[in-house]
Length: 113
Length: 113
Image (cartoon, rainbow over all chains, first blue to last red; front, top):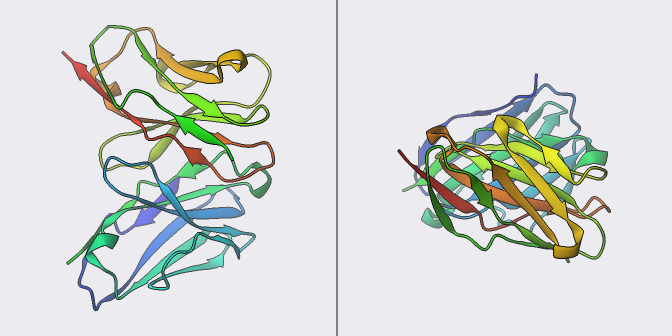
């Protein structure tokens, strides 16, 4: 199974809402990533978890809060977002020693109103 | 720091024609190189990768790429394009120290019938 799944597929939220994005993989990967992608641009790295510990935070605003409950799951908790946070949020996974070969999920299309 | 340049923002080809998408990288040593494809609203799918060895690598969906150290290039090719190949293509690089994935800006491929 070489699949990374993400839920929900689409999410619309107001600026005062709290919501979460979920990501799951069953490939035995021990590194998981969150990316943000704006239209017509490449993905931008947000967070990296390695062995369930946060290893990279690319100076992301605190209104984005990642969580890695176990080696298969990755969450992104959202609170008090701004309209400019509307984007496609991609999850990826890899083996930590091979962090260049990343497998991506289909993404969650987030719209902040 | 590593970087990737995709000189062509948008390419249009006719179905059945050959395709070459350009990618140039900047890195002090031999990097790990990738091509990803992204259909509208979807995640990224790995087409092929180069780590070492044979400089001509075969990927999925009939794509191939050739690593040319002298030109710092890793161009993607396909001999006969299908309408379903219309998508955004990203070249990416990771340094051999295992640093993060750096993407090019992408090339949008349109296929005319």
